Amino acid sequence: MTWRWRFENANGGEVTDRPLPREVFPSQADAESWLGENWRDLVESGVEQVALLDEDRVEYTGLSLRPE
Image 1 (cartoon, rainbow, N blue to C red):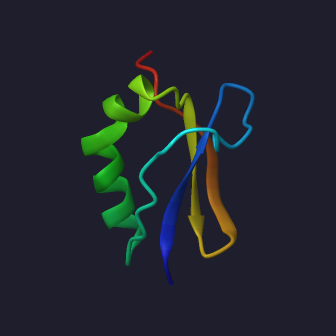
Image 2: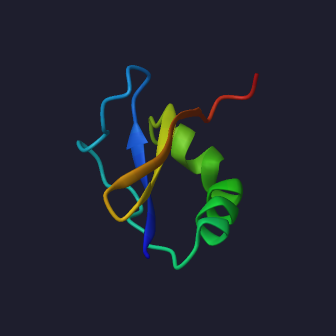
C-alpha cells in the first residue's frame, strides 16, 4: 500500500498548475501526520482541500484545509 494526497481547489478539481509536494507514505497515519505538519504551506500555495488516496482508491475526499 502507498498513500498520497491529491491537492484540490475549492470545487474539488485537482491542482496541477503549480509545483506541490508529491510525497508517498507507507501508511495512512504517516500521510495524515505529514498533512498536520504541512497544511499551512499548502493553503499558501493555493490548495483549498485534499483527498487521501491508497494507491488509486479514494479513502476520503473534500477535507478542507481552512480553519473553521
